[in-house]
Image 1 (cartoon, helix red, strand yellow):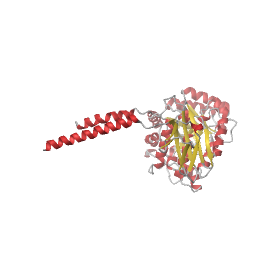
Image 2: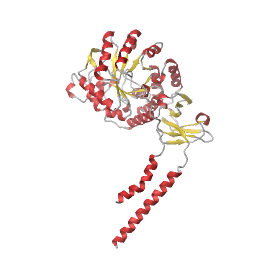
Image 3: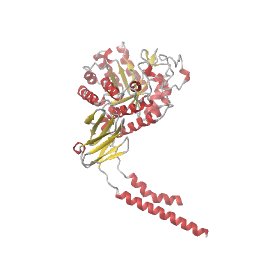
Image 4: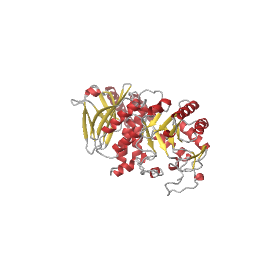
Length: 461
């Protein structure tokens, strides 16, 4: 009876909290540029089934290490809980190399990874979690076999997309045929392409024939170079984005990253500059998740996995690590998934000097402001009210902070090597309804406690 009375007393307060306005934007139709991608080297992620451990030598960087499809299936919740919406798998076709780089049979799963049945189950389990599965395809000299195999895997497994490497090794007419065939096999099928950095002139052609996204290595180079060291100006990175924007028909769908299976690990670059990899990774990922493009995070980045050039960058994943960086990735994902402006919005630089930068993203009335301090000192920057408005406030989402305009404007203060993402909102004042309700509930509760004590005392006399 006492418990029921307490619930009744506090119910108005719970209802009041529930009625507070939400900052989340309304649900819109999903686009591929809304995805957040986690890229996996199958053999080096998680070994869950010992039965397929053939020719395993974990001490040889060029040998199979035992990772398999069942291992990925067992870790889907781990990936999903970090906020990733799509997984990209390294080539899974029958091969004679752990990374699937040389294909022997387009129609069989490599026995080191498991079975076709397990791959189908992996796709189903991912779809249950509203996650998409993209398989990597290696360009083959047999153009007809590639077209047939491309459609066959979609029909057999219901996968959601392909990542096509080495586009330059086949002709544009072939790719036009390939795109037409695989997109006819499944509505909304996704095609990501990988071109050499210097092949700028063909980017527009691949977009024209139906590739949804192209990986931009020029953005990668500038991003990894900028954030792997401290006091590094972000001006060149901003200028590189302007060049990318003018090159692509849909620059918001460009594939972005800080490392991948073809590059040295970002952690290695940070170590070479004698910087703490975790701190550097946080800043780099903040930029990646809040800038235009489709972020791709290479497995192990969330634990600052080290590695040099191939095959050293394909080290085995370690799940027994400190969760600080994983939690930061999760928070970044939550913010990016909540704010359409970070996925679809315009991109405008508001301030840049040395390693300190502030930029804003805008989309359908929503404004996000991103501040990244890539310097060795605390930075205090004043943004004019003309840039953001007078009757507004900035609400910090990575770090709790509310910035209201003063005479100097909006004063953003960031410690060294820190970042924050703000959402611009209407200025809030003291919520008198909440204060009054709190006083009433508190008073009623204290009265209830006093009366209960008094009755108990009377019974004991």
